[in-house]
Image 1 (cartoon, rainbow, N blue to C red):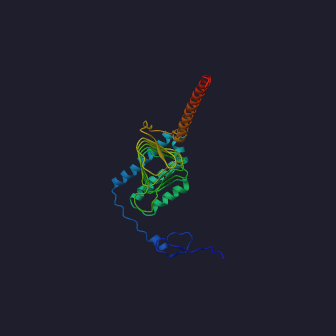
Image 2 (cartoon, rainbow, N blue to C red):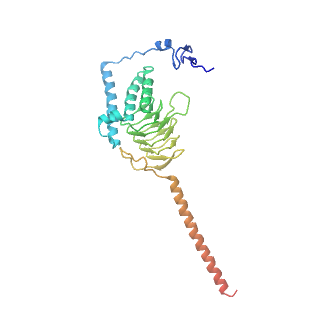
Image 3 (cartoon, helix red, strand yellow):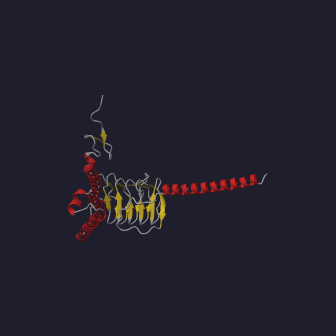
Length: 276
């Protein structure tokens, strides 16, 4: 017989909960200790001012990096990346203050609202822009520098069950194309482009372009990427380069073979003409 009310146990104490789907029992929920936050009025003012300054830089980045942005109202109400970033900024503050439950719940609300999953423990710099953003994931120990642009489907993920640093670190002035996966506690340098759908599992030096599965550095010491750069599709194609080199080599060998055949043919005609 099908059980319409499966037993659910509290994740904290193991007691059976009355409501299906509840992760904590009533006693454990009521027993959550809220840490005392000792902040002076000036510290509170500075804290909220810093959140506002970060968020202003994020909105400014949206206007600089998206030609479809026409008004502040439109950006604030219609851009999922901006909504997710604002909720992250507040949740991150609460995470730093060690407020339980609320930061993670805010990140869950943001994910439900925007399809963007940013852990409140991640550290993100100024001028951060998420374009479209559906399916984007940023893990707990990820660190992101200033002026970073991420497109939809990007994952900054971990590959370990160990607590501690297990997610990537991105430097300043980085563009990550749609669907790219950057996995593990690796370091992506400054002034780097990562092509769409690349899978990066090792460190990337400054001034590099990375494409492929697994991701490979295909250009080094490139000219400085402009501060505003949307050309994440303008990347070298290493496979096409190899094919072109092979074609050139084949043409050269064919010409050489034709020349050798003609030389042998001429030598044979001369021998026959000598009467031998």
